[in-house]
Amino acid sequence: MPEVIYTIGHGNLSFMKFVSLIQANNITQIIDIRSIPYSRKAPWSNKSRLSQLLKPLGIRYTYLGHKFSDKSQTFQHPGQSSQQNSAQAYLDAVSTVIQAAAKRQIALLCAEGDPARCIRQNVIAQTLLSREIEVQHILQNGSVIEAWQEPTNPKQPELF
Image (cartoon, rainbow, N blue to C red; front, side, top):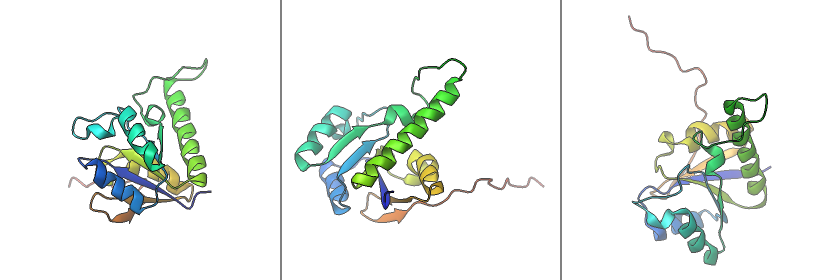
């Protein structure tokens, strides 16, 4: 079982700032969870480029966005809906992340800088927290905050 899983959003960071943040947290593997692993604002983060840039630094790059994204096209098994297939792909991806984190210090990479507005916090961290795995978000200013449990039944505002 991993001690902690980190997350980071590249936002509009420079590559050097991104590297300094992941190195400060001893990250040895980036797992890219973006459904579209390309960015005009941060071209260094494009899938093939990022993999090349991280390799000389001894940091592994793995792409899993196709399994975390609800936009991914999945093979539909007989008797299963595409929703069931997407859910299974998601759970398989979570298992892959947990297995990787048991061996290396990993960070899940997304584009959104603010974890509160991102799948890293709102979906993936919730799954990991429910499995009693600690999740830490690396913020663009260099601080690290602990993922929080989202309410399962948010209270609806009263109209009257």
